[in-house]
Length: 230
Image (tube, rainbow, N blue to C red; front, side, top):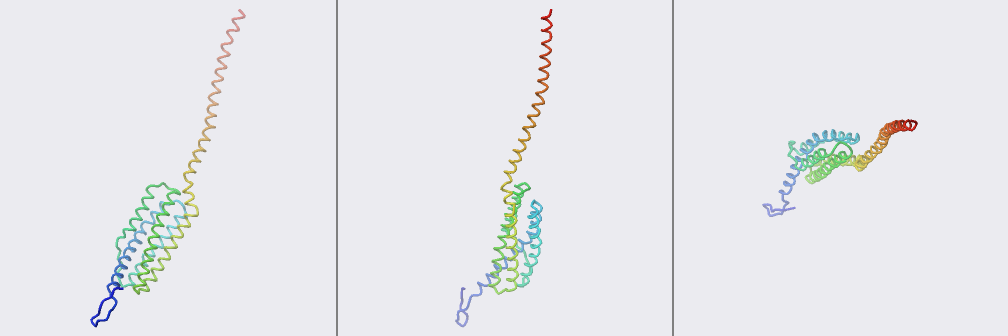
């Protein structure tokens, strides 16, 4: 730690470093506060665009947890004696826009669901890194109550990430991979169904033609036989 000399000539720790760390801690706390509030608006949209029931359920459950986390971050501000303030988090804004792009570029089904899971997990990983850092800073600054709350939120974010991984591995990723193959199989089945139908239609069309030809042939033969008798 940087040091400075006091008036009596003794070397003492420099307090500027601690002040700088506290300022950084407070700024990052404002970032994550904005991020959590933004998530409470983004998660319902993700749930609305998801198809798999287990994914919709996981997103809705995390929405409720996120609402509670907003309150917990406010408790952290209170614990350090500061008013809760939000500062726009560029990182979270970018992640949420990426998630919106995935929805716009895909159609409802397993592929979109896989994309939504990936987008949600990117958000979770950002939050895990953020809360891990904030908890560490709080401990270094001697803010035990704040550190405890932040560790609690960190555990919740890790659990949410684990849940999303389980949902993805249960079926969604596999279904997304097989989606195109399934469509090809359906097209092949349609073609096979069309072929017998075409054959039956051709057979029905051929029958009248044969009958007409037979009738025409019998009509021409009769006059010739009558001519020979004369």
